[in-house]
Amino acid sequence: MEVKLTIHGPLAGQILRLNTSVQLQDQSTLAQLLKAVRPQIGTDLSELLRNGSEHPVILLCGEYLELPTALDHPLKEGDEIVILQGIGGG
Image (cartoon, rainbow, N blue to C red; front, side):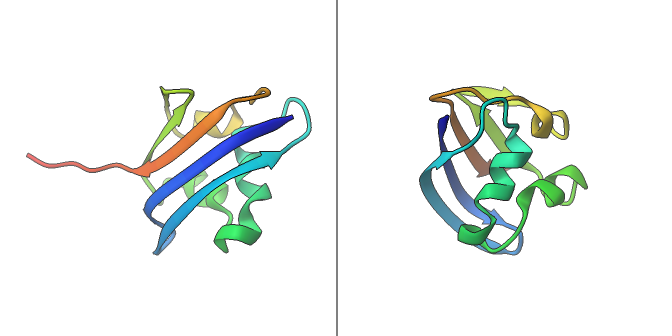
């Protein structure tokens, strides 16, 4: 199956800009997707996100996913995942 991944912003100690399509096996999870793009971004974001050391906004087809359970969320053909650094203020 093919899914689209977009990452923009400061994550894992670097500014990441990635907009790519990734081929995965059926029933792959978000964590497996992030492991698949490790060569392109230089780190396994799934481990950082699972350990709570990063706090990005993760959108799956426009719907917000809650960490860390989002990492085990199964993906399907055509899904679009966007990961942005959360911004707070007051």
